[in-house]
Image (cartoon, rainbow over all chains, first blue to last red; front, side, top):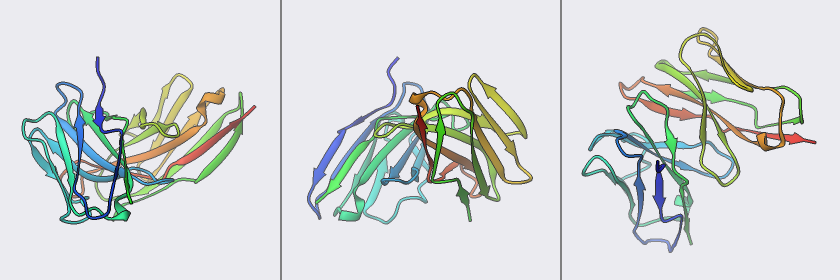
Length: 113
Length: 112
């Protein structure tokens, strides 16, 4: 079966622009997590969903970051007024239930020039 | 708050055994996970411990001591393909939700 997919795989944008990053979880997985990973660091928690609702968004760095999962499947991470410090790999992971192991997608590499 | 510590880098020889340690501090411990991440790729799940003791899975074993806030990942019969970063992660329920806190990862180099 298909794993977690993320699009685009690479995104280059200019400072101040708006970007959307998409995550398609494994079918039937109810929990979906977003992480940000910088070079040489571990994934940093941003937000997670159980179904359609954001269960914990305490990792979002500021109000420029927002994520949705309107139908409990695909999720979109939205970043407004991008800054150079937002450059990182954004990882998405899903699990059948929140207590189960997570399966990660390949990530979106965001570069803000 | 939460804190996870693991060594930054380790080097070992093909065929040998290596132990990667991880210490953590959290008030809402709900399980410890180990992931493998090859350069430029996504993390892949290796093991999970929620109770004290050793979990064995082929060449990989993971140990947990909750009272000491300590875990290790043991890799036996090392192969070149084991060169990767190994991430220790704690599932934390301090805030009543299920957050995963990752360490910075241990970069393992396996030499011929």
